[in-house]
Amino acid sequence: NAGVTQTPKFQVLKTGQSMTLQCAQDMNHNSMYWYRQDPGMGLRLIYYSASEGTTDKGEVPNGYNVSRLNKREFSLRLESAAPSQTSVYFCASRTLSAPNEQFFGPGTRLTVL
Amino acid sequence: GENVEQHPSTLSVQEGDSAVIKCTYSDSASNYFPWYKQELGKRPQLIIDIRSNVGEKKDQRIAVTLNKTAKHFSLHITETQPEDSAVYFCAATISGTYKYIFGTGTRLKVLA
Image 1 (tube, chains in turn green, blue):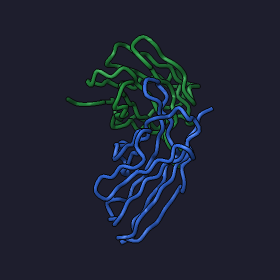
Image 2 (tube, rainbow over the protein chains, first blue to last red):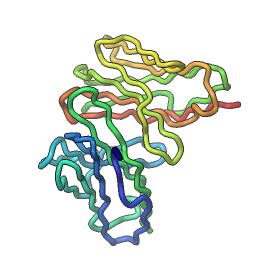
Image 3 (cartoon, rainbow over the protein chains, first blue to last red):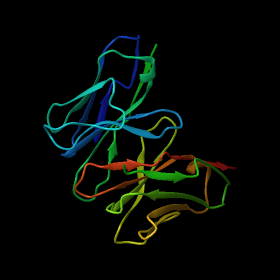
Image 4 (cartoon, one colour):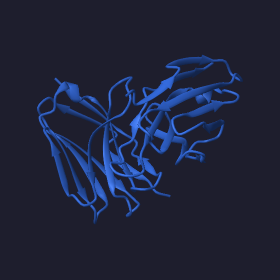
């Protein structure tokens, strides 16, 4: 039981390059989330997927797209990376029923030059 | 929209003293309130949580209290130790919904 896994752990991009961050969970959770964490700004929701087949924008969706490939996997794509997207990205998952705890992946540290 | 306010943003205490972090939520329908601890370079991890039908919950040196009327909840850490130094996040959510609103975090420093 690996919980929530993310790849890659680190990535350096040049402005304008694209990349996809991968996330998978093996806890049979319905909901999955992508957050970004910047110094002093807490966790900001980029996109979420309440259940398989649905995705919705969160607080800061501009510049990102997502795909809920199946119940296990939820990917985040940067089509044209910008320096403002330098951040640590966390994927998370939870079940909608109790106990409601949200589980986080280990994070991806992304630098855009 | 819904939000969770968290105070203070930074907190320094002497080892052995107590630390208190407070959060206020706006959505009265919220019924689950977790606290996460995030050590430097690591993922946030749940340390304690409380449901709206309970006023207080304790787990060794940490406790959480909830005041539904005032819509605020607090994390209490007693006999602080250097390993308690981390960023702490509160959150509020409604069972059965996607919403999971985080506070902005408190950086706790325990001075030896």
